[in-house]
Length: 334
Image 1 (spheres, rainbow, N blue to C red):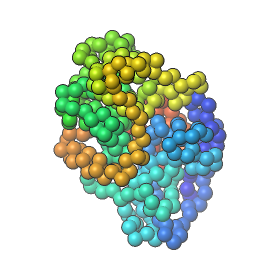
Image 2 (image 1 turned 135 degrees about the vertical axis):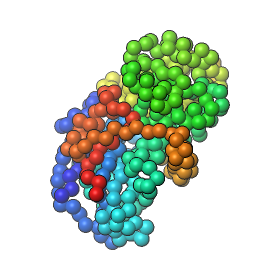
Image 3 (image 1 turned 90 degrees about the vertical axis):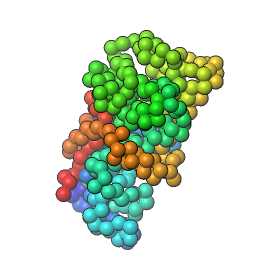
Image 4 (image 1 turned 180 degrees about the vertical axis):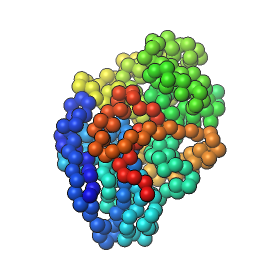
């Protein structure tokens, strides 16, 4: 049987169990030009909240009654495709379900011997690729510059800070709670960590960035972005990756009141979507895998179990409960 999580209704604010429909049906067999994949791991990402909204965006919304969109890792069960054979491990957007039929488009084979399978959803997967292009292409950090990262203990932020250090920058991470800040410094190599829950952010930025901010990688948006704008340097670069503080808001989105700082400092603020770099994914994966094998990149995954627990596990993205990359295991690994 194939258990699937389908979008039953569009959430207002935080999603709840009523927004989901859990269905179990017999596993479909692949037809000509298809393969059947047993899904093992499902990636949970903040972007999923935006995909639930019926609004114009960079990707069409998930339709009511459709399987929830998600990145996945699975193993090929049977195949009528030349490129894929039974037993192959693959990564692709196959949705929150236990089995998926695929024509192979947008699916890549992965080598489990190089890294744990879950790394291909995190540091060697879409979140790592997001960090790579969002920092290096958008912000072009230079040795000695100060790079500030919000959501620094999250799946993307944790990689951004490590790449900044690889590039010879000074990395300052913003996270919530003493435990996460300790993780930033002791495990990820950040130079400074700001616990925004226990210290006024404006004062903390002044303390940790006495010479100002050259690069800001933003995963949070809202008031945090607004405060950072007061500390940016001449020709600063800001990468807008996400705005998790705004995703579940039932009020109007809060934009930066201090945007004139961009004008005064001749700074650049640019949003990006990782899908725009699809033709260059292998460039990022190859470099990241090299850094990973050299011990320059570390990753932490939080793995939850049970597809039926998806509605509750998803909320850990927004509650601050998760540590690192949040992953849901929906099938046993043979």
